[in-house]
Image 1 (cartoon, rainbow, N blue to C red):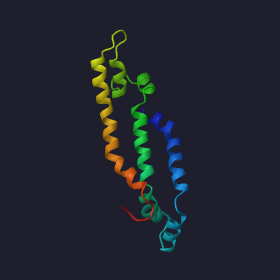
Image 2 (image 1 turned 90 degrees about the horizontal axis):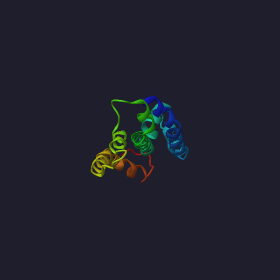
Image 3 (image 1 turned 120 degrees about the horizontal axis):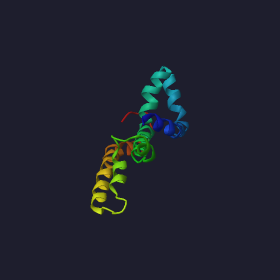
Image 4 (image 1 turned 180 degrees about the horizontal axis):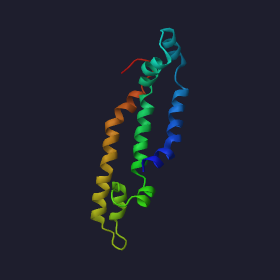
Length: 135
């Protein structure tokens, strides 16, 4: 299941990070060259610390897109299905089972909520400034 998800979302991820890096200040890279940094050191010490926001955004979006996917897991997995697929299986065909559906919806929603709460600091820190300094 991992290979189709990576293949379908690779272009979106590259597009998001590419758009961020196009607006990256060239002065920071030039200052690193003047200070004697190699291209690898410039990437490691200047670009990556300032690009944590889009990298975490891609990570969280990838997680949410794969978490909410139903088609491929329902088609290919029989035994170890993810929670959103179990949520669709809980809802009965002829009987609605509102109590089971509500519990399954709450349990299914908890994991993405925890992921967002853990990584929300990265979004706020990345939108504040791009000075070239580490956090």
